[in-house]
Length: 136
Image (cartoon, rainbow, N blue to C red; front, side):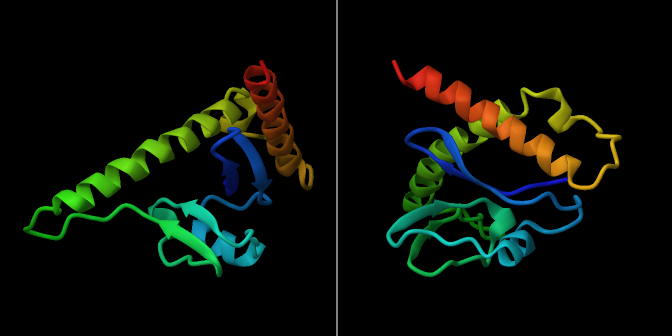
């Protein structure tokens, strides 16, 4: 099972949670089906799963791959390092959601939309912890 998340880096909060899809569905297809809208001027740091996803009025950054048989230029390496330093914050938020064991272990409950409810609760708990942590 998989979901796409939109995360506010400054506040480390989850601002959007897609519905749950089967694990074989590609991340870009999830974004296309969900039809996420962004505020104009937003910046989107995406991973390679969203290659080709370019929403309107949004500045997107994706790490550059090393060309076959060549090295990346120092400017490309510096840009990849900057993107990675921001993406690690996203990964920390995802890890905060996965503190709830029910999210990353096999869910055997086959009730309709129960997996969406579980993920929504886990994201809500993460946002609650994050607001308490950074409120001081």
